[in-house]
Length: 226
Image 1 (cartoon, rainbow, N blue to C red):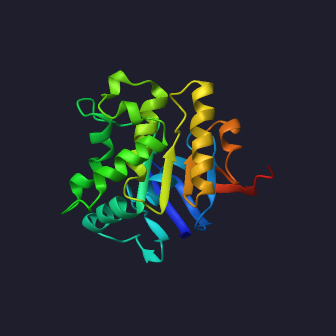
Image 2 (image 1 turned 90 degrees about the horizontal axis):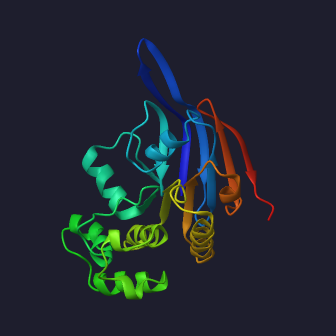
């Protein structure tokens, strides 16, 4: 599903050039659940941004579902983001004036024509996530865990092959974090490919594979044995 070859991203910090990614080779197959870990500045967020088509590499190659995306134009990157990738962020990124249902339907605002059954699919997703009685609630009427479930439903409403999660439990208490990770596990068991950035070992333990980064490189890439 994902393949990178010598992926490199450089940033200027004053007069110094920093290699946020330094010739990273990574392959992720369909159906995997991968956690990316590493200290601040290790390159994990830069990697996530490039894989999510939110940023472009300076050198190297990136292919998603067999499509070379490294040199694509903004319009093509936008289309790939909308059709192939669902995003879940630490801070939820819900629109405060919209209901839970409207937030989930947000990706279809960027489609020329919403597919038939989009609303029914969104309602079903929210129901599957235990939010049937929260469809008309706005984010400030929901708990942190409920808001993250709305964000997950929004990420899945387009049935994207890849789910990218950046510190998805970062703003949640430990009990709610476990509930969200159990949900991710269930999604993965149903075939969803998930790549997640986290700094918490107990959260990474839910993944089937852990990629550890340091100084822009992959230091370790190992299978979880649970």
